[in-house]
Image 1 (cartoon, rainbow, N blue to C red):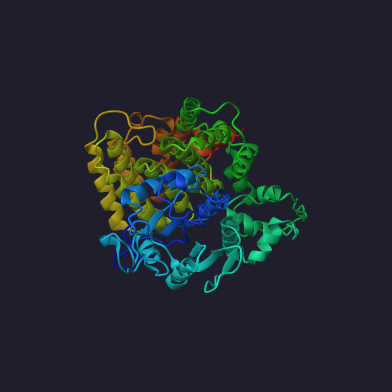
Image 2 (image 1 turned 90 degrees about the vertical axis):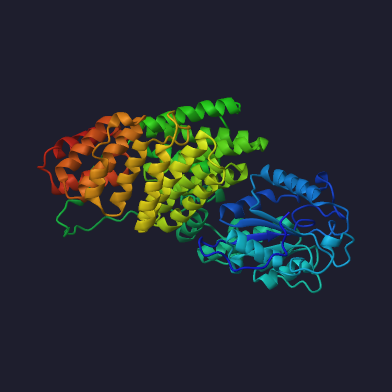
Length: 589
């Protein structure tokens, strides 16, 4: 139970604010009961899992705010209330819904328990619980909603500055809400429509008409806007809606003069020549993220871990095409295993989505990686495992950096590192995860232009790595002094200190890294540093070494292929460039 009579503070400025849906418990989230006092008294309202999960995926925090005068009346104690809320979290977890917070007011003016008798700032319709949650969790109240079945709920929401949704069969006196629906599910769906409408520039009613096919979904601009808001490919959205967008008209290009001094077709062919991930495999993965297939075999934890180990080995060896082919079934198996609702199942599910995020980011599919990163974040939070949350934050930071949101990536990874540190770092896994997160924070800070923080964090990572025991890392994080030094190369490169980056990595050797992917990354990171320093020959030699070690690190990464293209365009006669270009082209499937 969260004591809500604490002083109210402004939201903390050290993190981005997000919207929330504040949910009353009895009669809104759960079936109405007269003073429920046992965990079994809580039964979820019908059909609320899907809209809650959709709102969660759209970035809303889900927070319960409930008056619990049963404590003041002596019908229930704090331990009993905690047991009830553990039950509530479990019920929602079966629907893959995670509560970001539960705030309960135990007070009542006529209570019989002295410590809870009297007036307070938290009992609805006072806004205290909502304001406290906004401070604790970084909530933007002006973008949030309060959902409840009584005038007290609506009053609390209005006083806190949120929009409000009333759940009642008929309008209630003194409960003027922004939305009125007969069931909680309908109210949540209307909030989702309002959010999607605002994100796309359409009204909530237009969203509703699109859902029911009253409005034809053949407007490509409309499809694209909704696809962007939902973070799924437009073609998949069209399939979900049961419509076929009109084919784009093919227009012959008039001949024009290219003034750039380069042959654009030659540049394009070099950029795409070595891409070894078939488009069909990527399309199948896109579809699987929208409509997850059934597992090909009976799901079990043992089968899932065998699939995950094989997929991770493919990643480590740079076999991206085979890995992307395997991801739909891996994710389907992990989702099926998580139906049991156990914390460990959710941690494994998050790890599978992390692997998908890393893979998709590496091959430049950032739209799809945003979906997988969001799902990993959700499932990691449900698991309650700080190490799973750290892994999720690390993968999410990759997506955010590629989206130009390095400052947000820095805040998220810094928070995750702090959470890992609270474990006390008493196990090797915790210590290694903490060292890895310091590296991740350092790189995110460098990308955000925060030089002092970046250098401070990489120094802390060096110290942490030096204290690690001599043993292999966990499946998620394998951290050694050499791997931290390689991160330092990337940090210095990102800060623009190309010479310092080359100097930092000059003593690194491939044999210090356990996987082909990491050995290839050593060479590509050094190539980036040489390239930024203006050393074309050293860049070409480093990329040739990367291609020999892990061809996919050169072939599949858009940023590295761009360097190969620029070398071919501007330094065709430099030693190693012709050999490099031929190697990349010959790798085309």
